[in-house]
Length: 499
Image 1 (tube, rainbow, N blue to C red):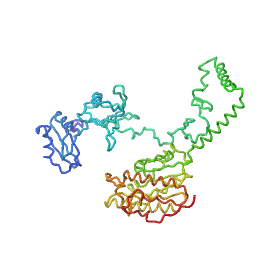
Image 2: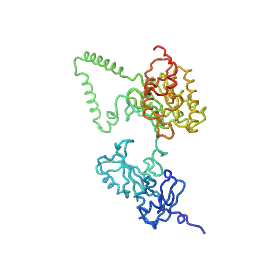
Image 3: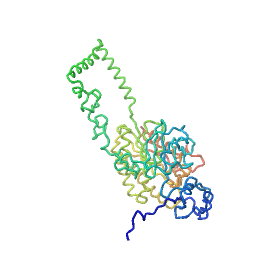
Image 4: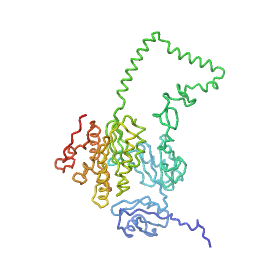
């Protein structure tokens, strides 16, 4: 006999769970003892401990609601349970005034569902008590769709929810975030970019053949859409010629009001020359572009001519995306220095396949040479990873191999300069702990002191105007006298050629 699929579907409306990855070794008795502090033992049906989670099934909704809203303590850790069927919805609230109380926020959210008691919290900047203005709250019995934009009184706020409660603005579906929508127009797509002078999608403004802004209505130069006379005939009818004649007369009067027109022209020419000279004096003639990943994204050099274009997770074969971003910030003709600090993510991706990494590096350098023909290109060595595990040591071995290839490549070129970061961050072949983020288990990310050191090295490269071989500056100024000197300090400094 056939079984109805809907009737055979398992319902888990009375089951809740929590992860146990941080509380390994717990037993059924440990969980039961904590649950008994909140509910009666007879209300508990099942306690199931799996490899990654603990699932608790109860007999009624009241008991389940109590456990969801109260939470338990296991091994000195507070644990909040969540619904197996994901009936608890996490909502993020943006743009609400910081002066608006939590009670007011909960009151406005009550029209979307039941607010879990004690779940509302305020976002804080890491390691500080400074708020970001973001609120986080949990709802149960939530409505199917939570609006992304609403008002709390007279204040406009934005809201984002998980559990498939937020609509995608591009397709109105709820099974994916907006940044993954296939209908989203790609910002990197050349066809999506347009010229803001002539409104064409075939080129950008720097390649526009027109010298003046075009009228978007008639497509002609000499005026903007607001002054276009194309629709005057339809608007003014039989009086169109009289109105246009009056406009032309007013324009002519504006040029004949001054009897001393010749003297005026001379003065205007002098003023124009002065303004032109001042404008030329302020033109950016020596721009610098830094291409990097997560470590470089934290660099803050207070110089408007230094443009830091760094995106976390970027690899060498994604250089085109970074270059595309630079086109919106700086004119490639004015770029005098380029710093490339990529490769760490390539080591993670390709591991022992150093040939693939060096091939990607060569292609990346060719792209930069073509894009910035007037620039010096500084290639940074891949940073070491902090750690003693065999996997980390294998990754460091691959990084040293790529660095050796990079150094040889730079020696053969007059344009490429090798920036040795490895020797500064790993004196005596051992990563200097103070320069790395000790809270990062991957050993990849550097600390605030490491960022400051990298900033100093980059500034020294930018300020070295000579054409001689660039030497990574000594790190002595950032290290106490008792520290082990790096190999770069042991070498005899090569004097650059005279400028």
